[in-house]
Length: 75
Image (cartoon, rainbow, N blue to C red; front, side, top):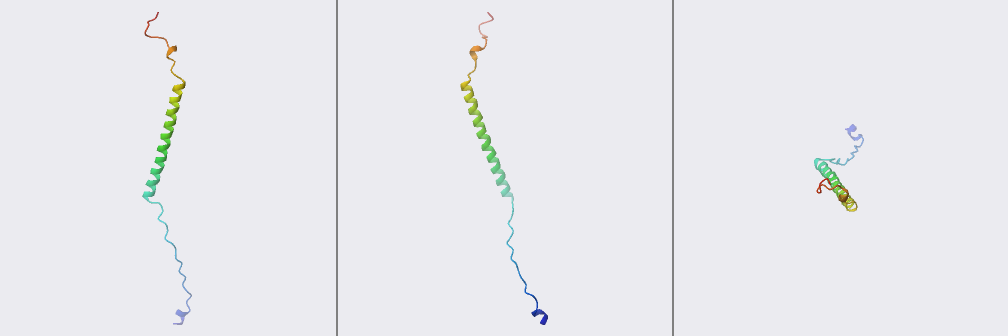
């Protein structure tokens, strides 16, 4: 009995639960977000290139009057 009374106190340290980490939903959400950003970027780049082509054609019309005629024969 004497030995049980002289035992040192037991210290219990409570450790918080670890976080769950990354699950499948997080991975899918991240990949869809990245795909959405790439899709919007590609669409914006396409609009910029299309507008550039329209402006280029407007300021550089085809030179139809410099081409030889094929309807009036060789003479």
